[in-house]
Image (cartoon, rainbow, N blue to C red; front, top):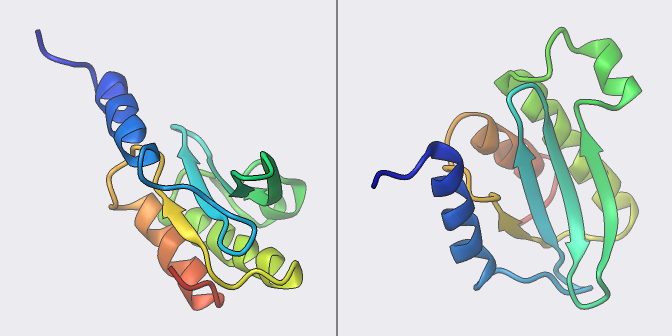
Length: 120
């Protein structure tokens, strides 16, 4: 039986999460992509806490963006997460694409975060 797209994404995500873990020195940059928005978090898996987060549902980004489901919106979220991470003293992260393919909006977010000063 053929898997649905959601089942394939969940399977990829569990495969990635077996390997990728975040520490306090190098947290995990987790990306969640919905049809209308994109969310990014820096997570310390050893402490079980979120260090910083950014998404297209925030009021400051929503005012600037026409839609939250574009590559441009993802790039804005990537810049914002990098800016907030640097303010917290984080410069190195481990990238967790959340089971999504490294393409389109996920790639735009990652590239913008790299330009913002995060290394992964």
